[in-house]
Image (cartoon, rainbow, N blue to C red; front, side, top):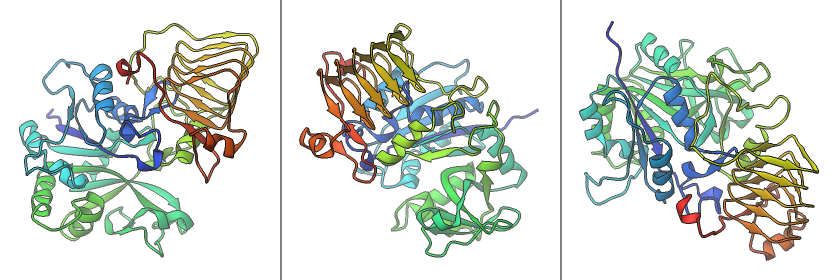
Length: 411
């Protein structure tokens, strides 16, 4: 039996401008999430769990944090030369320029594709929280004899104006791509939903090379969604893959089918954290059949000394000492002193919360040291006066990355 050869390319160069101050010193894929992970861990875990072990990660903006993290957490030598996860900064092979779009980023690394010589290339983003069996998408791609397959998510018709919408036939073939249409068309057989592109693609290798070689000669945005897909629909077999209907090993009945979140702004980032909580979370991190893998932390187990913890996630090395923690995500090595009250909040690694502090709807980046009697999320004017970022739409208060004598070693 001859097995198909597939190469993964992860686009991890996003700035994450709407996530400032979390992205002041790092790119969006390197932002911590869920107590022990980084956002990039979700797409990497999807590739590895799907049996795709040959992956290039293309980085660009403020990439050192991500490079360090991947070097420590994901750099391993496989049993064969085809097992690798390799970080690729801009090589400037086509001139002294950064990546000008998603398609240009792949074009500038066509040499890697040619050297690996795959049958298929999976081009995925690194900015989203979800689980996906990519091998099922590949099987669909082969079954449809597609040249390109786009993972698609049904969205309510009244929300579709904010997405890139795919118009498809009953067989799933894409006939039109519309970027944020004023009057989006519904999916076949479902008048209440439209097909939104997730920005994840599988290409036949020869087709990918052909369309990228053509695109680089044009004046365009050099972007898959804006420049490539709309112009190849007539001559290429492009299909939409319904992510929501795809089964996933280990998924619980109570979880949201086709859970996928673009955590591109503060409110979405905070809300996705809240989706991890509760007796029946929308996105349950406990899944032995499809684990989300992360960097190793050789810290002690968490400890709870008095008071109370309700509906929260505590990571390794956390100490809750006579404090109250409710409906919150607490990162590794966090210490919370007596009398503190933490509610509806996200505290990242190695923060220290002093006595009698009060936090509500707070997102605190790593290494912050909060003195005794610090109140955050109680008074917006006071929070702004303290130099914290207050998200106007949601009222969430964000505290940027702190400092410690070890911070440079623990990016």
